[in-house]
Image 1 (cartoon, rainbow, N blue to C red):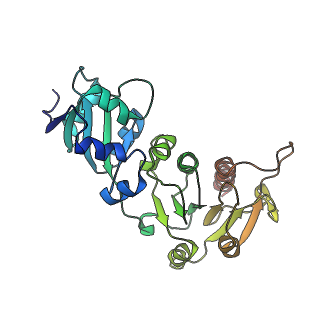
Image 2: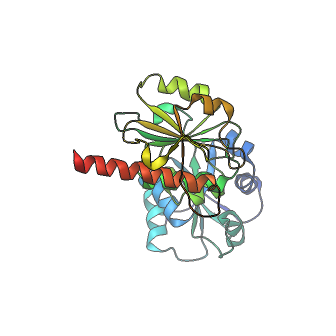
Length: 275
């Protein structure tokens, strides 16, 4: 049985307008400390990984599926029944009315959330402009065994709905932290000596498949247009390039990150088999 809603929203009242603002207004998301989660897999991942869900917005006009009924029954959150046309606006897609949209609490931007140990593999994304690229790199980092992602500088928002959706739920499985710049990351790494900071650059001094990525490594990926900042280039211990034979001179940031993460995972699997 679906839990009784705390309230119903059938008009564009103040609460609806606040959630609607979370779709496009970063400052309002940040002040509220919450963001929207759209889609079955992202919502499921958020719940399974123990994220705080403040509110579940659902369409009371139709019978819930087993998945939706389970969420409404088991998740300790406010339940709000919403008019389907309003819920469709918060769903962020043109495919009709979603069953549920979740309002999740943002975790703290604390680098201590990312564990650094002997087999550490982390990623820094410096000043990304595309929320979709953030989500894609989160997904790749999760897929290839990274321990966390740091987004630095003046950047697109990790909690933009486009980033959350592009991560396909990996945002909730992988620690993702925002930091002002390289100094804060350097201070964080100072407690874990031995981490090699490896930047990606089309003019890098070594091919990525010839560079040892089996030790503790932090991969640094630059802005989609300008690449790594001068500060990050100076901080890197090495710059690697992806060897290519086609007419393209480079890959976009998300593609390059995926290639280098795969190479790191490949090297680590080979090292483990040879041990």
